[in-house]
Image (cartoon, rainbow, N blue to C red):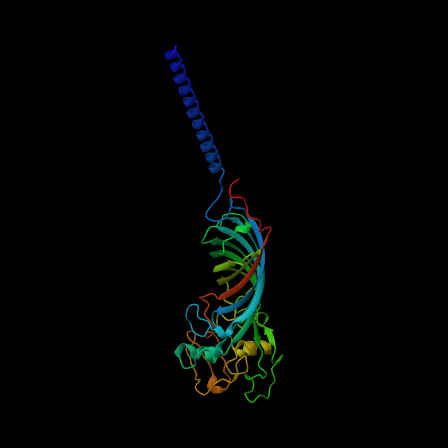
Length: 360
């Protein structure tokens, strides 16, 4: 009996041990399955507290416009004069549809300016430009569509934007432009002594309707004041903490499909061919002893250049200062470009400051 009782006790203890071990294994399996389920539902990324959520933003910019073309100080690619920088502004909106990409639509007003007075009369290339003495300003109104490609992907919603990012912008634009020139106070082509007043003296007049290169005489085709351009830009932006605002800066180039942003492209027309006195005066301002800003020009060393059809030809010594009929006024082989630097501020629509749950 004692042996039988002992065997029963030992068997009972063994059964209890096996039951505890099985329960422990069951609990461990449940915990592992729960963890796996959480991991399978995780939607995180490099940044943020959930999967990417698209959002919309709107903003405004102030810009600085510069120009490269026939009236640039020197004939070198992308040369410009920073003193000719002019301010402008714009409005834009966008849609961030991907963690690394956004589309934007933008309306900009950009002013550009150029003046041959900035060229160096002591250099071979600068002399012809200085003697030509043309100048212009142009208010360009553009509508731009662009794709922004960001350097760093941004996961999460609008409230989990990165503190800093950079991007490349590629797109297309439609623009309206109207080059203008400042009329000298005197018709120096008719009389250097200032005895003949110029029509609309001192005013900035539209140059396109005047046909300064013979557009109204059937010599060349009139150019249009609406065109297209290819804008390329790089930018950087920074999130303003605890707000829905983003501030940034963008540097862009507009490749224009026109050579008439400055109203200069082909050849001079003989002054006797113009019926309109204002068109004649504005077509060639080489005889004017002042720049568009009223600064005195040095005409003492200017001489006649007679490279018909090749260089610039002037009758400076004859006190007329006009280009020979058919001589080069500009270079039609290269279209104009403008440079646009923007300071931008945007506001994110629909964002909140509430942090999303890390696991869902």
